[in-house]
Length: 95
Image (cartoon, rainbow, N blue to C red; front, side):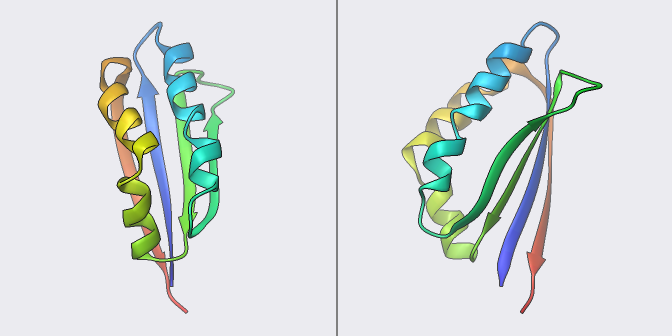
């Protein structure tokens, strides 16, 4: 079983660069984590305020480890002043 998450962020007007920096800082350390299959940040070409994080984890334990990491804590405590809206889709792949 693997877990795929798609998290969408809408940056506040004028905060696109700060949001991009915060989200981009998550890529390298997240990819280095045990159980990370895929982790990338995308910025919409037709709406530069909109970002999507797409991540895949081997299992729930790997995702829990990610949420307990130092870089996740920095992101979690920093993104809200720059984010107008955030929503998450989580899929569990069976098999």
